[in-house]
Amino acid sequence: MKPWSLTVPLGAVVIWQIVSFSGLVPTNLLPSPLAVLAGARDLIFVGMPPEHLLHNHIIYSLLRVFLGFIFGCIIGIPLGLVMGWSSKAKGVLGPFVEIIRPIPPLAWIPIAILWFGIGLKSAAFIIFLGVFFPVLLNTISGVESINPVLLEAAKTLRAGERDLFLKVLLPGAIPSIFVGMRIGMGIGWMTLVAAEFTGVKEGYGLGYMIMTARDIQRPDEILAGMLIIGVIGLMINWSLKALESRLIRWQ
Amino acid sequence: MDLVLERISKIFPGIGGCESVEVLKDFSCFINGGSLLSIVGPSGCGKTTILRIIAGLEKASSGRVLFGVGEAEPGEKPLVGLVFQDYALFPWRTTLGNITAGLEFMGVPLKERLAKGMEYVSAFGLDGFENRYPKELSGGMKQRVAIARTLIMEPGVVLMDEPFGSLDSQTRNSMQEFLAGLWEERRDTIIFVTHNVDEAVFLSDDIIVLTSRPARVIERVKVLCKRPRDRTGIECNTIRRSVLDILGRESSKLG
Image (cartoon, rainbow over all chains, first blue to last red; front, side, top):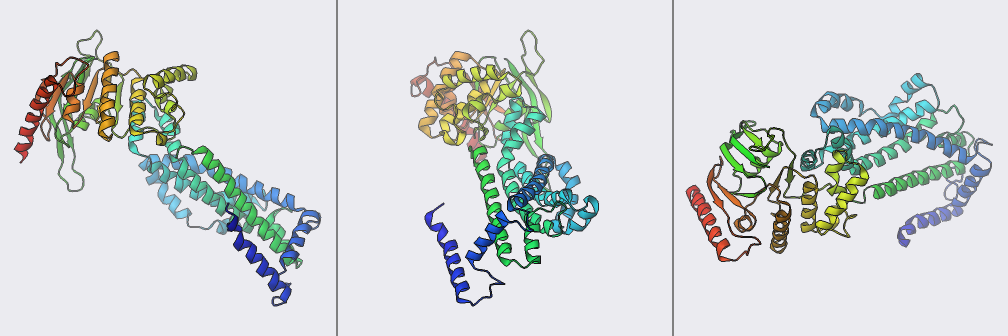
């Protein structure tokens, strides 16, 4: 990161603090940065609702996201390899995917609650839907973008079907699969918070935390929670990028 | 391994109103085991199709490919290696990983294939580059990796489709010398497709000159100059001139 890339965010915080001091904006709508910092402190040590500490909210949210993400990848990547490889499979499954895909993951919340009840399973299911489609579509296009000469080269080197799949199609599609995983993770993270608004059985989750803060009129904690959600999302994206550049050094 | 192509025809069906294309018609040819045969001819005449049919990547519309004729046990299809013009290396594999890919596909144990792979790395002048990815290699090196990857499989027949076509002329010359040396040592059966008559004369035992589509053999020229050859020697030049004459007559027919 370049030193000047922080100038705009820092400048924004300074202006925000000045506006708060001037009293132009009521603090019950927009608390000052210092108040938000104090709110973050309360989230960490007091908890929202009290005793429900920030790190537990984070752990539960991450758990839901990773569960949905893992399932999205486990199902999306192999299916994408098959659909990219075989035009027959794509012909059969493609229309089904195209009908389901435009339904926003959040529109699944009511039926997910009906099927799985409120809790880990329904949240993970919603996130799964957010992750699955970008992973699937990018895997398909990754396979389709592989130079067919590589497949012929592998065949003349006596590669069987299994080798073609695991040692040519999969590595060849990896760069594109990662694009799908990062998009999917982004959507999953956004979806998670909304899914948690509708309630969580365990009493933990970042979305649940900021909704509770609203219920008891703590805008400082709402804003602190939002910033934390943003920072965690950023860090997840960074770690995926780091993993990506390790795995595809060849590109 | 001896190889006979018997009256091979190939017609690509027309798609969506296009006319079908007859690329090969009753094409026959033989190659003696352990010799190097070059195929030259006008571009688009079907040279690559011949290789693809021998490699089993394309089916002939009619005719047969016979391996091992005149040998003790003919019949079974041997391993046919194919070297592509654009290398076709796996970009996610290192030099060593590419060279040992075929052994890996055949289930050779890791230790054994790495040991054999390193032998080929050395023999092909790739020492120090065994852990590099293809994008980090020069064109000549990439093609050496591709040839090593094919030869490590000990194929019965090796097909090369304009392997040096995208190299600069300096590298091209040194690759020709490298291949000639390698072949003298190993005596693989090689079919070498090229546009370049100099290259064909420098490398081959036999040259077959093809007509334009559908390809037929106009003439089969024996290159008897002794190896190692002198590119600009009188012997080579004489043969070069006669091959160029044949090609010239063929292209003047086309107008």
